[in-house]
Structures are given as structure tokens and as C-alpha cells.
Amino acid sequence: MKIFILICTLMSVSLLFFSSCNNESPEVLPTIKLSGFVQKGPFLNGTSVSVSELKQDLSQTGKVFTSQIKDNLGTFELSGIQLASSFVELRANGFYFNEVTGMVSNAQLTLNGLADVSNINTLNVNVLSTLEKARVEKLVSGGLSFADAKKKAMEEILAIFSLSKSDIRSSELLDINKSGDDNGILLAVSSILQGYRSEAELSELLANLSADISPDGKLDSETLKTSLISHAKYLNSAKIRQNLVNRYNEIGATIQIPEFEKYITQFIGRSTYKAISLLTYPETVDGVLNILNENNTSFISYKTDFGRFYSFSALAPKGMTLKIKLEFITGGESGFGGYWAFRMESDTNWKNTIYDGQLNSQIFEVVEPGKQSNLKVLFMSGNETKIRISYFENNNETATRTRIITVN
Image (cartoon, rainbow, N blue to C red; front, side, top):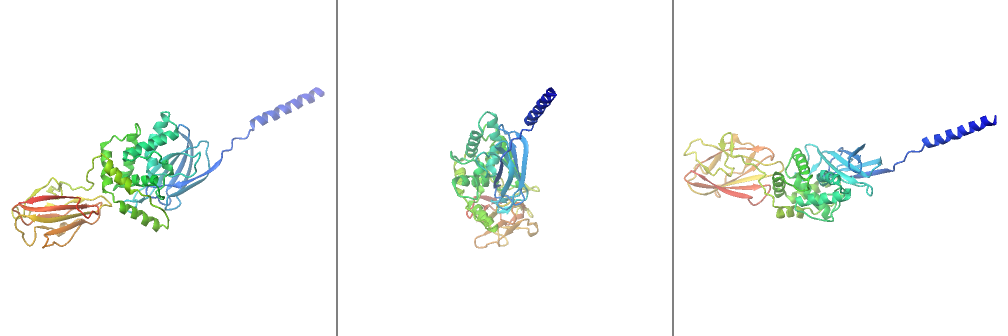
């Protein structure tokens, strides 16, 4: 009987020990809150935001948390997040305020970024965080620490825009709503990238830049270089600032726009990239010479070839203005009180002043940028008539360029 009781007691102890070993409490992960801004210009209320947990090598763990922007400042917040790793990928997709045109985007844009949240819980998503992502991943895969990879990638991206600031904060800490040089750099780069591009063009540019710089941190594509400097040269910094001030006033927000203008100026002044005109003047339209194209310099008057009309055609990108001034310089005799005339019924997207008989000039202005503008024009006088064409592009009060054509 005693032996039986001893055996039962030992079995009970064994079962208790086994049960204790197999009911060990799982590790309880700390709960954190992440918040910040999504900015191009500011993203709009309703934008989707996700935070994905990453392993140390920046591969996905499969854990994803989602939320939405809750106001037109681009503010997001995710509460109750439990992470086993401190590395995360942020991703946002939605509409945004275009600081260059002063209008809300017509299509959605995706921005993303990488961050280490071990010491921060406020982080932002912007164009710099988007551009550096692939490069950071490449550097980390090559053995660099996350912190060093972020620093190196930022330095390389700034160099593309002829900028340098060794102590600039990480991209996820930058904010176009606040003053400071670091934030000014973000807004300058954001405006240059936006330029006068559509949402689709901007998205393609970000993808192409990211792919180009990922292997070695250098921008190799001459096409991309030309695109960046060309759009930068047409930016109107005063208008960008006013657009942002108006937008934040409209949504009742008190903010401080950083001094971004000097960084755009610095890029334009220091860059060796080759710029081209963003406004296009086709050489011909429906087989007819366009007098605004720089390759076309000699024309024939209606007196020499009765009924000879020419095209007066241009395409100004959306958000950009264009005025053209025709001015008689010297040469033959005026016919019917002027040196040129145009078909009213052919007018597409142009508006014009009345012909000034004293100054022998007339101004034409694009009505709606982003749409092709065309007009049929004929010349009333030949005999080596010289006419100056002045181009006033993007609100410039002085001509961005001039040329003289000859009519015989």
C-alpha cells in the first residue's frame, strides 16, 4: 500500500512539472503608438497608411498595421502596435496638395520610407524617405548598419540636387510645416521633383530616380538630370510659398513654411545638368509651319502666296503660363492696318489683345495651360519684313527669350 501511494505521488509531481514546463507564458511585446505626417505637399484626409514590421535585414516579417490620414495636414496615427523588431516600412497612398500649381492632385501618389522606431514614435513619410528606400536596402544588404545606411543614402541624394548638409536629420523627422534648414531642403527637393509634372509623371520620376541611384548612390541618367534642372528653372518660389500659405489658411492650420527658396536657387546655380524648355512649340501642325518653333525663321506673305496661313501653336504644361508678343521691327509695308492677321474661327485656347497700331504689336496668351493652343496666322506684308517674337514663360515680366523672323 505504501509503495502504491509513493508511485502515485511521484506521478503527480511529474505531471505537475511537465505541465509547468509546457505552460510557460509567451513573451508580452510592448504596445506603442506611431504618428506623423505624409507630405508631398500635405496629403489629404482619407489617405491609406500602413506600417510593416521588418527584420534586421529589412525583409518583411508579415506583420502589417493599417490606418488612414485623419485631416488635410496629412496627420496619421496608429495605436496599439506590438513589434518584435524596431525596423518598419511606412507606405502611404492618396491625394495630396500640389504646392507648385496650388491645387489638389487629380490622381493618387504613393510614398514610402524606412525607419528605426527604437527611440522615436513620431515619423513622417515624404519624397526623401521614398527616394532613399531602395538605396538603404542595398547598403544594408552589403553589410552597413541601418543608421549608417540612412546617413549615406541621404548624403548621396542631396548631392544629386547640388546640396550638402552633414548634420541633416533623418528623412522621417523632416516636416515642411516647420521652419529650419533641414525642412527647407525637404520642401525644395519636393518642389523640384513635382515641377510641372502630372501625378503619373511624378510617380514615374520617383521610381526611375530610385532605381538609378540604388546600385551606387549616383545619378547616371542624363535624361533624368535634364528633367530635374529643367523643371527647377521654371519654378516660381514666391508662388509656391503663397500656395502653401493659402492652403494652410484654408484648412485653419498655423504653420511655419521653411526657407526653401535658397536651396532651389543653389541647385540651379551649381548644377551642371543641361536644361531644356518645358514648353513645346511643334515644328508643324497638320503639315503647316509653326511660326513659334525656333527652326522656322522665314515665311511668305499672303501677297506672294494668297491664302498662305501658318500655325501659331504652343503647349504649356499645366500650372504654367505663356504669353507671346508679336512686334513689327522693320521692312515692307503694312496692309489693312497691320502686319499680320489670324482666323478667328481657328482660335484654340488663345486670347489676345487688340492690335496696337502705334506700337505695331499684339499679345497672345494661353487660356488653359495643359491643353494645346493653336491659331492660324497670315502675314500682310512681305519685302523683308522683320517681326520680333517675344516669349514670356511662366509669369515672367521680362521675355525669357526672343527671336526675329523674316517675311517675304
